[in-house]
Image (cartoon, rainbow, N blue to C red; front, top):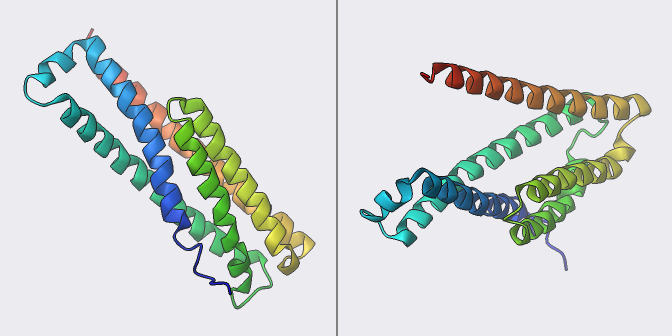
Length: 185
């Protein structure tokens, strides 16, 4: 007996676990910065130590959850758009084959909890999970793609995600530079 909806909640669990591991790292980083700046002692006069840690953890968990949820939404949209353009599948049966790939992100998110104090390893783990899932996805839908469709599918995703990362990086750099220039010295 198998249930096709068994793995439907794995994406949500993976998003929560990746968000949690990054939030623990961000919490420790922010607490160290607050201590170095001397602000943490003043905060302890108004809040308990546990309250401060919990509030910082919750804020970062919420931020990372929103970021990963937005990335999941964008990913689902680009996958379905590329399937529309390049696949011979018209009824969506190929997408049902790929649902088992959510195990990849679930395992990676569980591993990220073990590495929650190392941001580099969490990032490498997330990127590796994305690449492994992409290869798994192509392997599963290969039958519904022609050779040109396969090339177009891969090219579409590489160009889209490359442009997306460059745009976010460029915008972040511009924002950082404008912030630094606005600081009076």
